[in-house]
Image 1: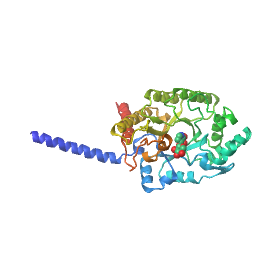
Image 2: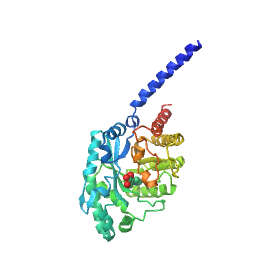
Image 3: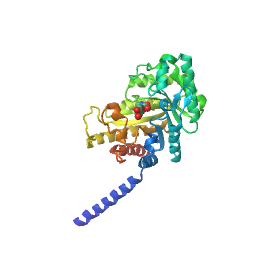
Image 4: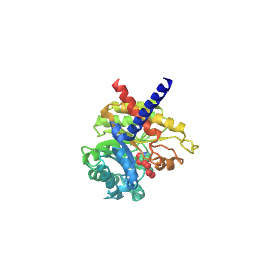
Length: 354
Ligand code: XIL
């Protein structure tokens, strides 16, 4: 009797475990989520077959990590190079993926010729150049991208008012609104986002952005959503994050978690991703997704990861240390953080079902 129950429970476990494994193998992010799941890519990386396979299977949305920025497209005052962005769009179309455009206007990653001349332009010249750039690029990608980050990171780093960029200095403090109008004139359907970092972690920055949103809405300036970059660490306050989701969604805007990565090595002392850190990262990932997934459908635009594998994350350069911030490891294996993403979807579903 004892033997029987021992073996029968072993058998059951095996069935469950095998069942689970088979099931887990089949699941991909794009199949599981009810909203688009995206990844930032470069043309070089998606040219590798293993890379292309994983990106195609797992993701339903792509953002160009760099090649649709002015540095790549804007070759001289009125010349544009769309070749790299176009190759990315073709890749996405072949895999039924949507493309998010990033980004039309940014104080960083300007082409060299513009860095050299921008100070010498008077306001009207710069405004005309920028308008032509925005309108040409938006027209080129009309029907090919679903959305654009119009202006990236226009608010001061610490959230205290607008960033003192050359655009603000030359074009005045209403330039962001005019950039949105120029984009809208060139494509009546594309979704227009304002994109920035620390929205979920700095309440002051959230407030400054909400003031801008309220002003845009009062004046009828076209704005469809907010991109919350979500370059976060394990110390992210879930209350602050929740507040940002609530405040933005209450204004009827779509929310794009547009550049997600989770740093686990803030002091640079880690030499490997320990099981404890992987577990903390998994938990935070699941909470981020769970709270996002609970938003009303119309407010969910997409969650986009800022890269596929840990070893190619921009954060290694940016912070000076490896951060293991993404869903996949060097060997394209799913990390605990990947499971955290799936867990975040499940919890919300269970809540709804009950
Ligand atoms: C980063 C890219 O990942 C790097 O490859 C590049 O060298 C610098 O830009 N906020 C943004 C992104 O909006 O465009 C940045 O991307 C990361 C921070």
